[in-house]
Image (cartoon, rainbow, N blue to C red; front, top):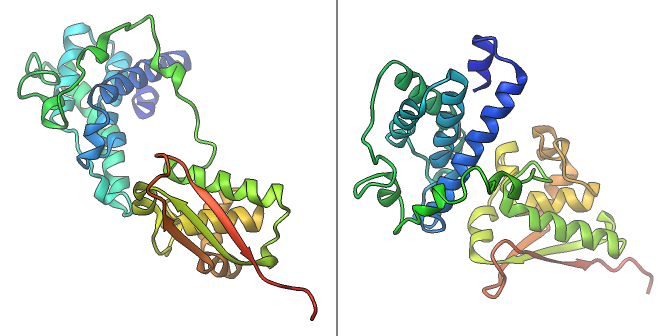
Length: 273
């Protein structure tokens, strides 16, 4: 979208307008297939991101309603990305392709390419192929009156959303109990199976760090923050961070709510006899 706006000399206000509309379309389509879509293994950032990119690009291109619908239909045939690939560089490929393919879909629609009338919600359309019985009405109900964008926000930390509760728990423990890194003998992070599936992993680079329970706990206790620097490749290989990751353990808590995490710390005895 940004490349298109730059190429065609469009104003910032037009870009912002298109972004808001694209994000609204993307979120509404995502809501229609959630939570079954993600549970089946589809990475919703990629699979629904292509619709947002198509809608935003269509707006910037000045496409009419029919052309815009064709752009969305073409995008439906280019929706891809799996959860299984999240720990790998393949995740970046599918997210990048969502933006590229959405733009490509809009450019094709501008040139007269067409899609099926119900490419998304049809009996053999995208929504039914990619999940359980979709809540198709969620795509258009209240459109233009109720804004899904108003329910969205920025990530407080530059890492996987599932890791945010880990960071919050560790920062709170560090702050409320004045725990210093030198005192720590072991960190245990507990959460549900999704948390462990996403974050119980070895860390070799900055990409791994963004979805690592061990790294998030380590930088939280060492630095008291978890910003861009803490997820850089330099920090990943910092000997102190490597050592703190090694002290971090994970534990399944089947009763933990989805999206929650609990951190406990065992401190080393530093007193005398």
